[in-house]
Length: 101
Image (cartoon, rainbow, N blue to C red; front, side):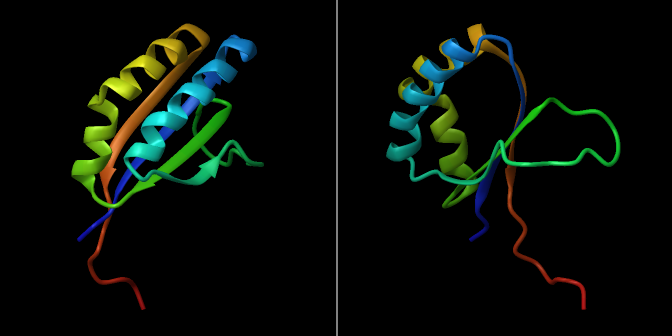
């Protein structure tokens, strides 16, 4: 079964407010088994335009990734994030098919 992912690009506008979001999102992420693959590490923009902070979360499957976003636990955290940042977030299904080579 293919995993599910959240891919987010975030510009933080209120760093103290964003800290509150990070603390609050931990409740939902723990409940739904999220695992950070990328969490605002070093990066070099090579093409295009994206926000300054990048996050990739992995879930056991696409349905769980969607359920986490729609959960009351994440909705509480989301309100904090929306006050402290501007973000683009997509929830995608992973790929389990053949690979090159």
